[in-house]
Amino acid sequence: MKTLISLLLSLSCLSLFIGCKEKERVDLILHHATVYTVDSTFSLQQAFAVKNGKFLDIGSNGSILDKYESEHMVDAKNQPVYPGLYDAHCHFFALARGLHQVNLVGASSMKEVIERVKNFQAKFPNDAWILGHGWDQNLWSDKSFPNNKELNAAFPKIPVYLSRIDGHAALANDAALQLAHIPLHGQPTGGLIVKAGNIPTGILIDNAMDLVQQKIPPPSELRLTEFLLEAERACFSVGLTSLADAGLSIEEIDLLKKLYKQNKLKIGEYAMAMLDTGTFKELVKAGVYDRGQLTVRSFKIVADGALGSRGACLLQPYSDASTEQGFLLLKPTTLDTIIRELAQSNFQVNVHAIGDSTNRFILHTFNRYLSENNKKRWRIEHAQIVQPNDYRLFTTANLIPSVQPSHATSDMHWAKDRLGNDRIQYAYAYKQLLRAAGSLALGSDFPVEDINPLYQFHAAVARTDKNGKPVGGFQIENALTREEALKGLTRWAAYACFQDEKKGSIEKGKQADFIQLEKDIMQIPLNEIRNTKVQQTWVAGKRVY
Image (cartoon, rainbow, N blue to C red; front, side, top):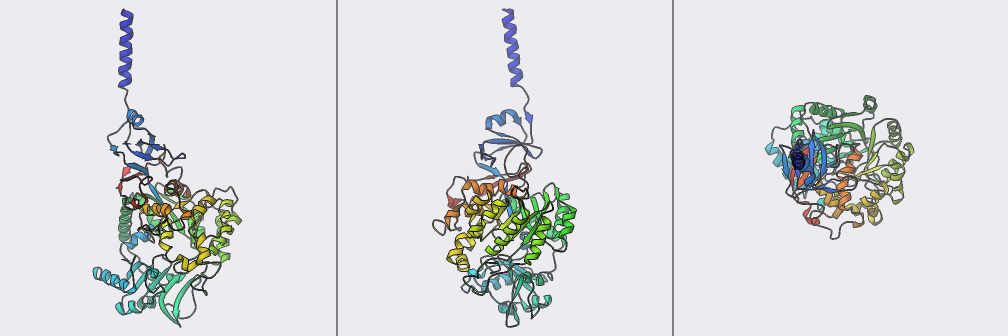
């Protein structure tokens, strides 16, 4: 009897010990969620624990709540949770500067452009220049490029510079042209000063824009920092936790280094240095910069212009302008030399290529200097018009297409006019690109397109605009599945920026970037995706929205 009592007491104590065993303390526990991990199996979980800014464990509600405890518990109330969204191609500085410029997006006529500029000047009467962005003549009854006559009449003295929606053309008034000493004869390499006779009309395309831009006084460092912080808050509000900033000057990169060292910026920033043929070797010699949330290890090369401004370089003339074919912004020999030299470095090469001629040239050049199993992760930015015979070149050089799905739904109303019935069939062909490359990095190109990544998700899977047009989708055969679109905005985007070991999925050891949405974009009707709101945004285990 004594032995039995002793045994029962021992078992009781053991049970008490097990039941009272301390749980591991962590910084954060999120539970009762539908967690889309976007791991290699695209598994669904219910909860996770975060410690020291990283995911410590992911599993069921029971497994996480039984093992861990925290002062910070987040009950997701069965709402969906995803990895933080990654915009693989955007312009963070342009977004920031645009906060103090005239917003011309959606203006339906030149008259409306003038009215918006007047309203802006009334708010900021002391500005030395008036800057604006976002006009698109394709939305107007007269779809030809405007001239600056109305702009001169309304603003005869103050310089005005208004960039087109794609950033590859601008309209400047005479006051701005005079300050820039625009020449009456000749044209800049890789650019076009549109003229009537020998008189500039105010329209500047691609490299010609630099003539005026270099005269525009930049904002002070303090003011620009304020703009960047405001832009960061806007990104967090739509679920963006990381950005690939496509083309920055050395001065902009230096400012980023300073702001991250001071812990003023929190968003992940993959900064692409804009190619400067005179200084790129210095950056290569300085080496890769990868500290905390800032990485500098790539160059952005702009090889041609945009389709909307007819600067994209095509193999055959434009269908709506038989004398125009677009142009390269750098000489082919220059591009070849730079790409060959960068192939010997640790830097990634990301080339803006819109037209089928540009894509063919860059794809062949990449293939010339890259082996089939290379680890370079070089990218074609936009890959907008690619001839069918050229898709194989993505596979043979292990290249990544970096595309912006809403470009298709923004351009679809007029792209056929530019390209004709045949070429439009292999434009914005994201499914074909995915089959060739094995992954797609998705971005927005903001502020060319809206900052909201869910608009990209919707455009990728529905291939329609915000009104659900066209019914059935634009070239729906090139739509992505919802799983592919989510990967493009998380795992594949991180891979395209050499950050797949750190970000892009909810997995043990990765940085705890995640968002909670009010609706499950993997399940809800397509017409509800664009209106879905972000409930919370977290970066490295800290709530930022």
